[in-house]
Image (cartoon, rainbow over all chains, first blue to last red; front, side, top):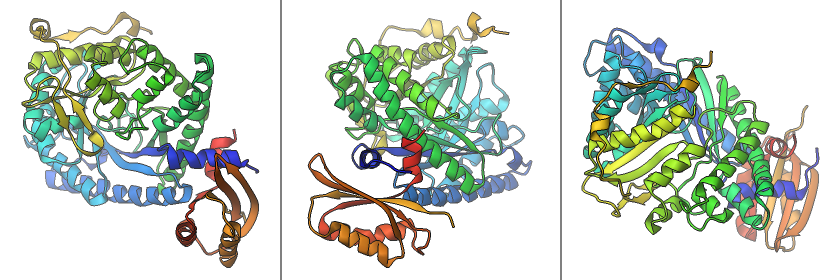
Length: 452
Length: 92
């Protein structure tokens, strides 16, 4: 088969100059068969399973990086929601003990984050779910690599407002127990959480999954940015076409590497998540793409339409490239992790309300947003309820990752370090939502969910 | 035996002996050159060499390591990537 020099160079340039990488290979691991009534045996089963497969994941992924010359930035693990596997444990601190075991196994295997410390409570809570939620502040303060999630709403079940009330306080507790509230960066709250999402903090290995599932998250904001930059004059129909073609190519690369990695590890291949995932690098920003499309600053009028066009083109290219598109497959707009988003906040172009609007058309939620440390718990619950309502009503995933930074106020600078980035504390409405939130109960599922 | 096809891509300033040095290196390791293209693109010398490594004892990381000496010495950027990635991205 012959290739033109231009074709070969297109691929080479993507990795050399446009930050193209496989953002994450995430191995989903079922832990249900590790359960044992003796917690010592249980922990030992969990450790052996996670550390063993974790080491194999890291070494096999490194081999493929060499073979294809494409970096695989993160090697991660997601496990069965921990609340399910501790149901049979009598010990009050069973969730914490399992969290520490997961943390140690991940560390020993060279895995930077392990997801699945969470529960699905969209309709109600079991005793184990409640124990796990109570443990979150302690777990996130005392583990390094464990990521937590809670699914508190779904289109079919509606929204568990009793859980949402609880979360306002939980998030404040997590923030208060960690420097700059950084524990909150490892905790995502969802509506319609997917069971095969490879991205942290919200990854978990759902109950409908097999024993193992290798999921892959590609990333190409830099690659998409470069084609948008080259096509400054064309109309939006033509722009959509060039984005589609580029996404097709990077998704195919992701699928190739994902399938080969799964086969080399002798585990089933799961999905390719085609989400555009920004990093703190200047050229790797989703906000940067929207701005190159012609919106002066992310958050200005036109941003929602631009983002809608962008993700639609990404989905169309991705769906053509792989029959296994899954996970979140939206666009991330994490404020602290995306240098363009952050600069828009600093310039006063982007508010939480606009971010909420952006998540209605494509993206997967209010992500990595620093808010004042004195924001009332009920207001945090209300922001969560607003965002998750968008997911519930529109049958899509939405998530919330807020960081109420202790001692900081709107406009203050905060640095979370490394890939978590830096940001400015965003302004939150000071009007009260208390009486609404404290009603509790369950918001009924929308009429559109009755499809049978 | 089926082929193990790999692309060697070189980017840099044009100068004498680039192709000679790389060809010599692959020949010394029993690697066969299947195809070769070169061009000046956006002001840079670009060369793509498709090689078959099936008769060689070398692996891709080993070849990359060998070529990195030429890379440093001649001020080039050299990538070594299995052909499948190009097939996946550029052929439907």
